[in-house]
Length: 160
Ligand SMILES: CC(C)(COP(=O)(O)OP(=O)(O)OC[C@H]1O[C@@H](n2cnc3c(N)ncnc32)[C@H](O)[C@@H]1OP(=O)(O)O)[C@@H](O)C(=O)NCCC(=O)NCCS
Image 1: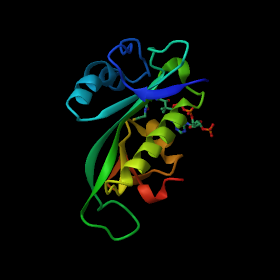
Image 2: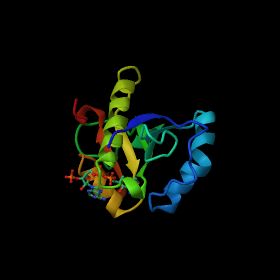
Image 3: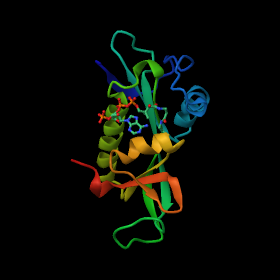
Image 4: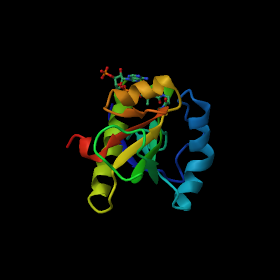
């Protein structure tokens, strides 16, 4: 699938996006643009060159901090700075073609670049359900012990 990833634009057709999860559709339709304008999160969309405003998939990033109590590994302060992978979803028509992985790798590349100028210990994601958590575990994310749908990946573990 030929695709490009770029920032969400006003002209993009947010209304026809359907990943099968109501909350993720609704967030793109009603919240993503407002949050972008208020610098609360940044949304990136995957589009195909022949249909440049149909959203095939998207992800959103925001800054956050996370308690380290449930993390295994190195001794860390009680809270560390992190990037929240606030949303990631693929339209039903584009699932199973590698787009979810492509979006995740794009997001992780952006986070590694950010971590070169701002201290960021890890990436955090709140999976919508066990199925979504399975997707993230495939790429090395680990659940927090007390919150199995909150998963994290240390920036140091992101493949270069
Ligand atoms: C989860 C989601 C993003 C996956 O997108 P996708 O484009 O269909 O996934 P890809 O085609 O890139 O799959 C990449 C790999 O992940 C695997 N995978 C996909 N969904 C998975 C899941 N739910 N659990 C475990 N593995 C999964 C695929 O089998 C594939 O592995 P392979 O290369 O070894 O065959 C997509 O199904 C989606 O948008 N779901 C609804 C929203 C959602 O759950 N988002 C997660 C955020 S909470």
